[in-house]
Length: 147
Image (cartoon, rainbow, N blue to C red; front, side):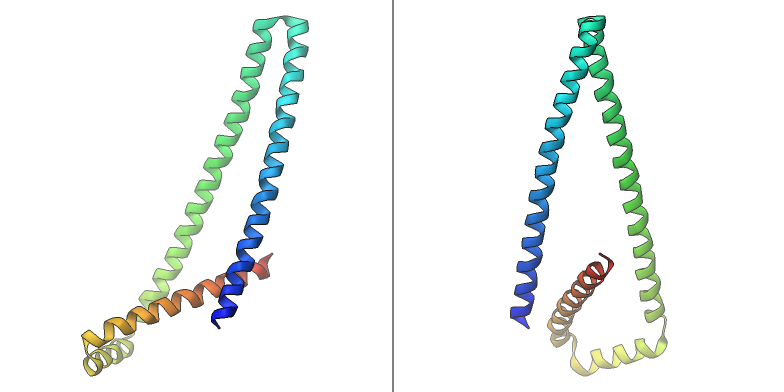
């Protein structure tokens, strides 16, 4: 069990490093391409209209690129916030429906009385850890299935 978890962590780490390296190489290539395109546009405008017009054209190109990047960032941030709000609402409604059940609450109180609070706290901590590991495993399985 532990070896399987370690193998999964190693595999996900290696995938992450590979993808990060590829993304970095693509970003460097895009940066160099953009630099050459900007230099070509600058030279073309400089030869036809002069130095001031060429500088203003370069500034306008970068300003538009900055506006596009900022707009896409804001749209992505809003989408992530909406998705997080939906997930929180789903979790909250599921938890509320469980805690609204009087039979479950009565059973929980009986367990607390029977075991005792001092012994129950470490058990709840271990159970929470196990639940978190289980949820993470299920989320990674569903993410792999979606890809």
